[in-house]
Amino acid sequence: MSLLKPACSLQCRYMTENYIVENKKNIARVVGEHKTTYILRTDGCEYIATVRGKFHLEEDFPKVGDFVEFVKSSSGQGFIEKVLPRKTKVVRDNSERSRRFVLERPQVIVANVDVVFIVMGLDNDFNKSRLERYILLAKQSDVKAVIVLNKVDMVKDPEIYEMDVKKVSGDIPVHLVSALSGFGMEFLLPFFSSGETGVLLGSSGSGKSTITNWLLGKEKQAVQNVRENDSRGRHTTTSRELFSLPRGGYLIDTPGMRGLGMVDDFLKVDQGVLRDIELLIKNCIFSDCDHEKSEGCAVLDSIQKGELEQKHFDNYQKLKKESEQSKKKVTRETIVNRKKRVQNIYKDRKNIDEE
Image 1 (cartoon, rainbow, N blue to C red):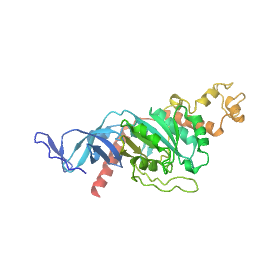
Image 2: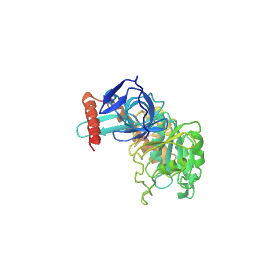
Image 3: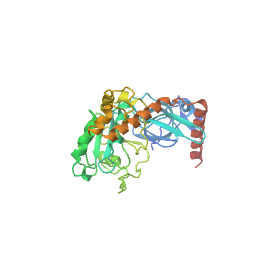
Image 4: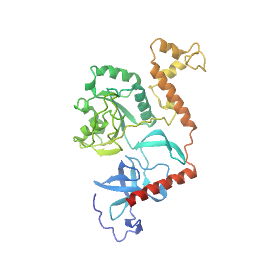
């Protein structure tokens, strides 16, 4: 933690929570996010910061990757006052529940990223339906995506998986790698050549932390073996964190996400993942075809001929249902919920101060 220089005598100073705070705006980037605190980095210095004041009435709190305005105290404490406009944001549908209120709104996962690396292991982690969700998540966030098929050393013919993925990936590039051995990892480097920010998304155990360590050139992120019965990880990464890469650029590692709900109508953002099913539906004889037993159903005919996978269609149906439910949600908090939200934040912050 860097020591702060004495404030100029001309600067307005005031007392806040027993700290002398400079009334001077500083710009920093959020590189870490915890329950009620954030890690900010600016000019090579890092600060532990909290939000305060009118900020509690804002819709979106800071996220890793955000640029923020903050003021700092003589003790090194930071106070975030504003989130600067975001260039991009990766968003998923979210529902936060507590005992006394329900808060339903889109959740920003990370902000200001240039590329999303969708990581999937070629062990029991491989799940094409989940991959379709990640692809749509990137598309609805309007961020360039790259699919990274990790652990090529775990299968005999990784090219078969690559061909299978390309059936749903559309124009998204697909790369085979082994982060553990370094095979194929060089392809990642050009994505950071101009100082871009990338984010790793994928389930626990897919190898995101191993990829992070390879790009950093050191064992920064803890890595654990996956369970042998299902290849699932143990949530080695527990929070989002932004790293500066030695060759330039930035990388955000994230924990595995259990929920990947769609915020927008996925048919509006889809440019190939599930478009094949939409084209089939247009060929059904009846416009209100249920695709279960209706005569002249083009979807059922394609499944019976082996041209369309049943799992692929089931995932389409599930996503469509979630998308319709998302439209019905109330996206604005009520005054009661907002007040409750602020009270919970202050309560958590007070408990931390008393520890």
